[in-house]
Image 1 (cartoon, rainbow, N blue to C red):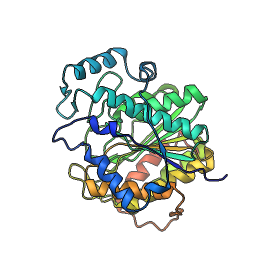
Image 2: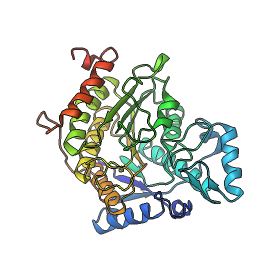
Image 3: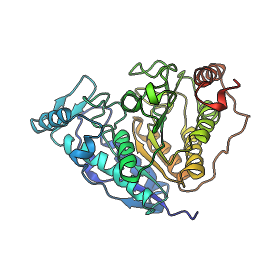
Image 4: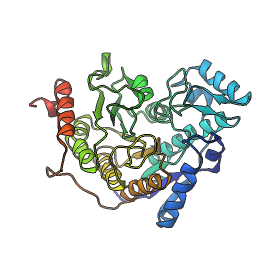
Length: 350
């Protein structure tokens, strides 16, 4: 399979979601782009343009009442939707463009325009619930993209990998009873929004297809490499997804001002390499990432650069048993295996 290039979705419209002095600010994108330019990554990317997602597309995840309320709220001038989440007069249009940018990325990968793609968009999405905004998020970009890919391309198994510091409670809620989407999340055991327990495995036909790995904030590069090798890779081997989506939040970076584990750009490169190998092995290489969190501006750019380098073809760590893992992280991984042993053959002997 020849490499057809790495697509990047970006447009200045994403800067028009005006959050004032909020930590989720336009500079997250402009400073990330500056890092990519300085490192020579930009010239290796295929530019992909966004579009406005249609109401019918967003309505596959969000209620029509919420869609109308958000539009009216922004049209009236915006403000605080909740104590954490800000909207401005243009935020509704920008949020539609964020969703539409990710949908265009899915199209580009599915249709073979590019091999992989990354959507450098805002506002982020993985906390957004069907009926409300939450945690800086207006529409759940990745959830809409997963439903879109299932319906338009008939993909019956989609893997969502969410490595944001915060648990993606909105994405979990949407797909909690659906076996057609496997949601895998590494996140802080103690951070916002307080969800994402190991025991939350899904329900009904979706039981076993929700894999939460809450980790201590001391977890670093080696710990995440270990968790991906020990949990994600074997589960993905059994699930064999037809498309891999990544909720790429880089707020686990060790210097993040509102979150932070002990991750460095190397750690994000390790995770990016792992999901790339999964996509290559099971999904014909089809891999799409979408920006979520990450609020240390220089660090965010460095981490995104590490991800894109892996997805552009740089060889990364292939996984082995020599990870230097903290005991607390080993215990967390063991708990996940115990809880999921009845759902996944790879853990049955554990």
